[in-house]
Image (cartoon, rainbow, N blue to C red):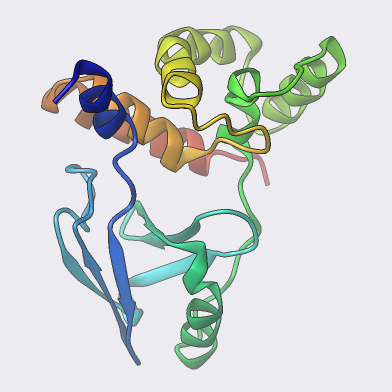
Length: 189
């Protein structure tokens, strides 16, 4: 197998598959080893804190973790949430704002200022945002452009985890995973 194909497969690891039941979600082939869902797991409704379903990949918040479910299952997850009294929360945009420079679109000074302002409102400093971007930048360019994904709309937590999983060894990725979740969940209420 060529180096480019291997790189593509490492960078684009997917989010596994899911089956939505009455009171549980079965996760299979989940790629992110630090997660409670790795490599497969049954997540009970009673263990789910909330879900974010309004944009992109669906996010199931459970036990200080975020587990991804395909947006194709959004309707089933909405029914699951209603049936099991699970709160639906708004999309968190922290990673989307941090990763905006790596989209296949123009990133103007106004865009940059708007994203930084939103991140500052959620407790970030400009210095911290620059440090995060420096850490993930090369991998995000490889993820979005070398793979020919060319996403121009939004890159989020699942994207940065996929990209960084290909870069880091197991221990480094575990550390990054914890930091990435903290970044995802950070907001000033």
